[in-house]
Length: 133
Length: 312
Image (cartoon, rainbow over all chains, first blue to last red; front, side, top):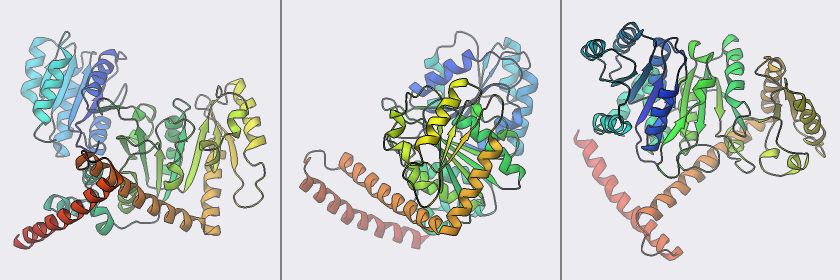
């Protein structure tokens, strides 16, 4: 039980109040043997970065359905840079294809749209964090 | 001690929260030996909060911790949730209720219980030492949601708060030993509900029965809907700390914590050894032999390590 575990921070930045998706992903990662820290709704990018540092998270997963993904992700990534925090960031939600590409160029590790198999997310996290943990 | 730990400790001593968090992770993963010799405990007060799932532990901490921040104390929160016995994964959801704290510079660390059945996590004593050494004067420790027998918190915290809420049954439940006995302060939460008042009366009638000396247990009613009762709760905590200091009980509790740390470490070692070595011979003799072998091997490994460190 004292083996190293992948720690994932799941957060919902911004103002939309629909967190079913975040919870489904959180449960799937939990069942895949990860320790999932769930922060709940309406988090600011500052709060998310602070939480990721305090929790020593290996990955951050964001759920955004509000349409404000460009602004929120830009802010989050710049705060992470300020704090010298270099861990993968996943985004799930309703993201137009063009924006998804922009986000990935900006530094978001991966964007997951509706219908992404949970096994794909788990696999990606394992392959990205496998070396760390 | 390897290089990573040395670097982390240096940053930790400079007040780097990230280094603190990374050292906590090391402790969680079983590499906690460095806390014994290289981390120095400072003056602090550990307030343990325990109670059944959903009674309001996290919400109470959210309000309570904020009050101490406003008084100028450096506050940290450790919140434990259970690990899965099947997948070893965990859903750590205590931050959801601690919304006020996340904007106030309070360090919150969620920990999984990782197979520990006493309501805490295996690394808890090392983590508390790290937090106190970092300079946190008030440390709130939230246990997993518990039942009747998870009493480890009483071995670790300086002040134990048991949170109750209506719906736990009649007074017979209050007579039971175990969790019902360990608290210094009893909080009857959800005071906005009518049944909460009845429960509070019952608790008042029972918890100090037959108690003639020492600390007189306090009973406080709170509500996280109407946000009432917290001033009284804060007062009770402060009084208890005063009592601990004046009576000398604080020292006794710290000794108890160190003893608990030692026993837990030994038990963990035995468990790991049984799982690792003594699979074929599941007798006490087999275990003894395995431990002896392990100690001899351990010494040899240590020799290697010394050579390695000397050569660097």
